Amino acid sequence: MTLRIYDTMAREKRVFEPQDPKRITVYVCGPTVYNYAHIGNARPPVVFDVLRRLLKDIYGRGSVVFARNITDVEDKIIKSSQETGESIADITRKYADIYNADMASLNVLAPDIEPWATKHIEGMIRIGESLKRKGYAYVTKDGLYFQVDQMDDYGKLSGRRQEDNEAGARVAVDEGKRNPSDFAIWKFAKEGEPDEAIWDSPWGKGRPGWHIECSAMIKAELGDTIDIHGGGIDLQFPHHENEIAQSECAHGETLANYWMHNGFLDMEGEKMSKSLGNVKLVHDLVKDWPGEVLRYALLSGHYRAPLDWTRDLLEQSKTMLDRIYGAYRRVWGDGRPVADDRHGVRDKLMDDLNTPLALAELNALASEANKAADEKNEQAMETVRNMMFDAGQALGLLSKTPMEWEQGGDGDDNARIDALVQARLDARKNKDWAEADRIRDELKTEGIEIMDGAGGATWRRV
Ligand code: AMP
Ligand code: ZN
Image (cartoon, rainbow, N blue to C red; front, side, top):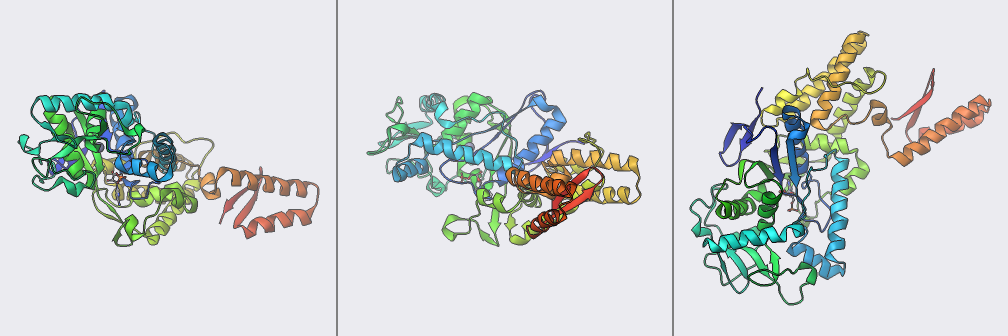
């Protein structure tokens, strides 16, 4: 089986051929950290987490270098600092931590490298100088600009060339530009802007534009040419187009051999956006739903297609996972399963990350598990248990034991319930039947069922 991925640049699926199978380099544009991530923002990290797991399985754990940056200097962060009076350093640290915790609750593995833009200012300046020296960049009263018509194949990723880069919203209006499509590599500091967002440069004090941040971080952390560059489809133009322009004109090499873009997430049929007031934050969703339910829902559609986020989708995802974990419980043995890859999940992922079909394979495994359990076929039960474990790892699901899944809740709450269950056992030992029944009834009102067994008692949420 070979890995095929849809390359946005080639506009077709291509067999993946790494430059060096011992060091596969992947870069995914990360968050701008000034507020909470919504569930749409979580789609790229989850999708590319599946890709990363797959690459590690194919090429070996140590052979994949996965970088996701933190954009910690940007107009919106400055604005937030000016409005709240909090320092930029405090705002970005706080929201980067929240982001990483939110992603961890969706079983997204921490990146191998997490570069912060402000640690790479020198690299950004070097690229700017090189572009200016080669005649690709010029200085206006507002900053250093990239001159789009100097690059022959500008627009090759998106097929968009003449459109105004102002449409990208992150470029300030500048009358000194030679062409409306020209974009800022460096923006001169304006009156009243915080010192924290001002650096020296050969052209004047100021800060980097958003696109140069990624160009510089990729070069410093991964090299001139990387294997795979990913992000949401909105980044294809202008962000990725402009990363290409800067990097390729500065060093003369292809920036990325494969470009992957995920489709957008809609909210009940509408675009998810703050102005419509229909944004669902990951931070809030994880209070009501297990992280794996959110992940299952995100993976239920193909990553390139738009995904409609609805209450139904969440409920269905929960039902599916309950069924899968229920089957997993029936074939559960002693201790941790041993990975067995004789299942169809990875084959489906090898075809441009076909997660809907991969989830169908996982559901088929659950049916196999139920059959093996019905037949009390110990051998088959062990095999399917190990396959479910391995399939779960490929998808970032089934990270809990079936008992943990059925218990649900958070650690503190589970500890409280464990204590009550133990108190009931103690009451029974002391023949205090009234107290034992009282505890059972109390837990029942919370939707918790106690199951007495030979070795004591376990419990689950019903
Ligand atoms: P931003 O904070 O707007 O730079 O977005 C961070 C990441 O989330 C980018 O990779 C975007 O492409 C992605 N993104 C933002 N909104 C959505 C959405 N509704 N659906 C899918 N991806 C999104
Ligand atoms: Zn980027």
